Length: 150
Image (tube, rainbow, N blue to C red; front, side, top):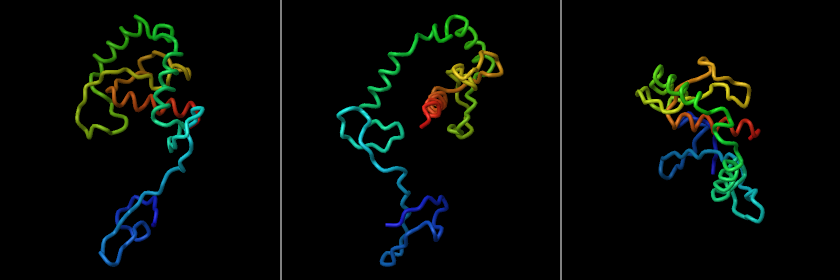
């Protein structure tokens, strides 16, 4: 089997031609070797960067969420709720930072800190952006993985 990371369809260096059929196949190169889940006693194999199988990743996220402080203690009290509404009124559509919506306008539901508060970001208007829930979740998940060094 021939593996390739090339993104150019039908490029000679990126495809495997089967002479009998005259067809071509392109197989993506595997990203990482399967490893046992990091949860103690679990032998399930995973290729996920965080090292947990699906079941134990959910448990790890639940544990992490239970250990977090309340939203008010993290600075998201009444003042934040008023600021959030103000930002959503000024900017009612998702900024679509990942180009997920194909140019279609999507209503914003979440207000995001461009520079996260835990990294020194503020509630200044210039540090806030309106996003749909999908974009906000994707951005937040990427920040968590970068912070963990994954």
